[in-house]
Length: 596
Image (cartoon, rainbow, N blue to C red; front, side):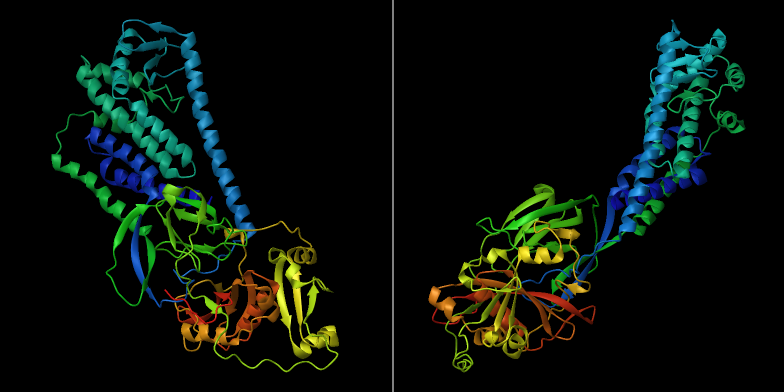
């Protein structure tokens, strides 16, 4: 709806610019045919040119970041509900006005056609001439002419000379265009003035040719004066007495003008350039490093649409946390737990770039693919920035065995209740959140039975019950409310002390492969999402791709114990940044950190 409002505003500016040039420089000129071409061009331009935007490219140098890096993409926020209500209300008012005016035009045409059907046609003319007393004035509508029966035969011949010009030159086409313009821009006074200018120029054109055909110009002018009482009753008709004033008689004079005055039509060009410049938009393009390129301007379609879809792996499973950005812009989002995403105001000629760790980056042309996308991702031949955890270089020594009589396993708490249910029986797809309590924290909460620690597991159903919501309610794309001021990717991404190699090595050395998982041969890639705060602290650790509760819990523990990072920055200011790291648990005999 905002797109429609902006289009109407730009359209109103265009038609106002054409009207001003005509009123200031062209309305008194006698090149009527050129004026007609100009006026038609103005209407067509007001419909087409708002769809065209001049874009100037701004190259933004950034530092290459992790596997999730890409164009600078801030968290998306919803506008206020009151703004949505206001927008819907204004759109409804505008649409009501359009319908009312179009209905009025249709009613006028139907009324004339019905009256014409009842009247008698006058023979002897190349078009249909209908004499009807229901109309005081004489006018032409499409391919027939209506004349009041009180008009004499002499006057009828002069009127026909005039109206036949309207019919032969198809002036009804201009009237349909200008009437549609008034219906769409009923709120814009310039549109109604422009419509009057079109009609006025039609009369100049008809007078010019009719005077060449009449045997007595004085009689023609006298007939005009006799018709002064006939006022227009239909907007789509050309009335013989329209705009009957001193200026119309003045424009009938055969005055010689300089052909160079026709160059005044070119005065619309600087006006058009000014309007294009006023609505020009910057297009930010992210570059690696500080390579500078000259600023350039491109003209591209401004037609936009909403794009949504689902990101899946090659097995059809949804991918959560996939990054979807519009190439060359700052528009982007991430997929939700079901792999769904949605973007608004995407240019029709845009290219979507979809990336996910461990998968090949895919580019999709929006125009060719449509607005509802099904995006299968192919696994890469190498895994990007994935830490393989197996038998690693000497890890820290294990903690001392617990005293006699203390349980040898961590306490498992499922949806707030202590359970003896084996972790291997808990479906990872049911899990919404896992927390690990250690030492005194676990004992304070659950007593001595949690001396070896506690694993708190919250299922999706338990989380939904606690929040008082239904489990199957999901919100995707631009409907999600992201945490305020948390960025997906920024100009300078957060950095682990020593860089990515040091981070991968630190994770590999500090992960303790759960013994039960080793014995049961449990392995896989746990994808962890966490936030590096503006102070460099790591927090809000969540598993976005689960393998097994044991491996999930260990991945969360390690991420939570990371040392402070160098925080990410946006426009020179430290900000909170969301980071994604896949940790691969395998039973290989060596540590391998895969790199591009």
